[in-house]
Every structure is written in structure tokens, then in C-alpha cells.
Amino acid sequence: MRVDSGPVVPCVHRSPVERRMLARVVDFLFDEVADFGTIAEAVISSRAGIGSPREVVDLTFDAFDREGGGALASWMLLSGNDDALDPIVDAIHDMIDDLHDVVPGAMREVTLSLVLLALGDALMGEPLSQSLGLPRTAAREQAERMLIEGALRAGLAGPPEAAR
Image 1 (cartoon, rainbow, N blue to C red):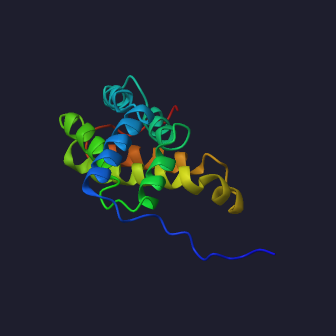
Image 2 (image 1 turned 90 degrees about the horizontal axis):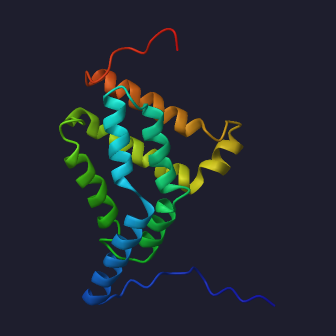
């Protein structure tokens, strides 16, 4: 006989000390998960014509999927900590601030969309793309197109070559 105990509710009654400790743990874990230095280098290389927008997309998506950033963000939200995502948001914000000469204000909206696409893809991209009959890479391909279009609108790149 199975007894239904009702919905699982995360513990939301944490002391300020517990909240700070949890934030430090997340900060440490996210530093281990997402190598924003490598992503920043890829952005700079892409802007210089050495790298590609796809490299930026793949590194961002991998940080949330393969490296566990999406699972970490989900866990933090479920922990009930109101400031749970601060370390992740701060890390992304700091990286964009560090790239202010390379990533103008117009690209901040593209950054938001890229991160949200990567997070969503990490959490449910495989089953959703499969159910829609799309290739597993569909979200990455969309993100790459968005990054290229955003760079064109911001005047950071010329139109793609027809020979590609």
C-alpha cells in the first residue's frame, strides 16, 4: 500500500547564516561549472573574426547542460533561497561588464536570450526537441542565428559571406 504524503516542499526557513553559507557554496560550485573566462575569450575571438558565434553558443550551452549549471540553478530555486541565483546572475553580469568594449549595450538583450535559451535547453531541451520532431541541436542553431543577427544590428559584424 502506497501512502501519498503530498507535495514535496523545500525547506524555506533558513537562518541568515545558512543562507550566506548556501550562497557561498553555489558561488564556488558555479565557478567550477561555468568557465566564464573561456566564454569571454570566445566572445572576443568572435568579434575579432578569429572565432565563431557558434563557439560562444556551444560554450554557453555546455556550461548549463554538460557542466551542470542548469541543474545547479534548479537546485538553488528549489532550496527556497530568495537570493539563490545571485551568484549565477552576478557572474554573467560581471563577464558582460568586463566585455563592455566588446559587447555594447545592444548585445545585452542577446546575452539574456542566449542564457535563457541555454538554461531552458539544459533543463528540458532533449525531451522537448524530440517531442517536436526537431534535431537535438535546434536550440543551439537558433541561438547562433540570434547571436549573428544581434551582432549585425549592433554593427559588430558585416553580413555573412555568401560563400559559406
